[in-house]
Image (tube, rainbow, N blue to C red; front, side, top):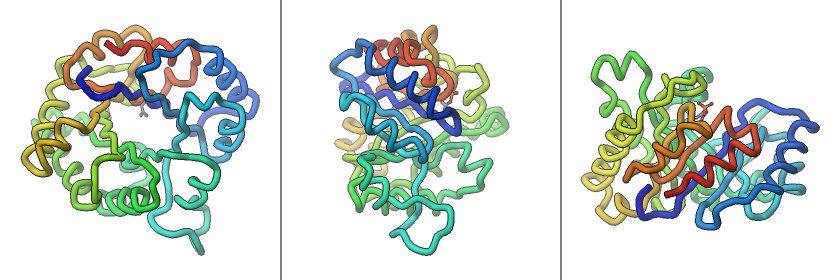
Length: 249
Ligand code: PEP
């Protein structure tokens, strides 16, 4: 880990029931968590209120998506204003499942980031290459292109955490090696230095996501430029998520 405060997010995706979420919340409430780590969980929209009302304040709440502008006649969407209203402080934007399954593009994601930040909803900005892009030697190109879309839209990086999540590692059990992750994190930091500023490059946290679990987190956390994790599957198990939070070095 680097010099910024370690950050661990749990992305629950489209999982859970009132009952399973109540169990997960109770496990998290009872877990011993390192003090010097920012912890955020992202429940499905419909359970955010339940989680907000039962989870310890030690853990902040994130949404998994938000509407691109002010709420109104946008059937099926959830607005940034509504998220703020129920006590949600973060939103995950640009997750690969939204990019590649739902079809959100860089411009749309960039606009969402701008709107969220304008309403003081902090952003976990996801980037990452697909397997064929990595194999074609395009990992940096893809990540930089996605970074550019965020950079063109965000007025300040203060409330942004970048999540590098190689698509081939998400939900596959195929974690990036610590070296593979570190290499991209350094490149993204360097991109920030050249294209935004030295200060933003050194202050912005870059977290890794993709099959992080209780067994592989410690090695990853040792890497100089890995400032935390975004965790999918393993965040659905309270004790394992606590192990990942406590892997800060
Ligand atoms: C994610 O979806 O952000 C993720 C990293 O998932 P998993 O940990 O399950 O690979």
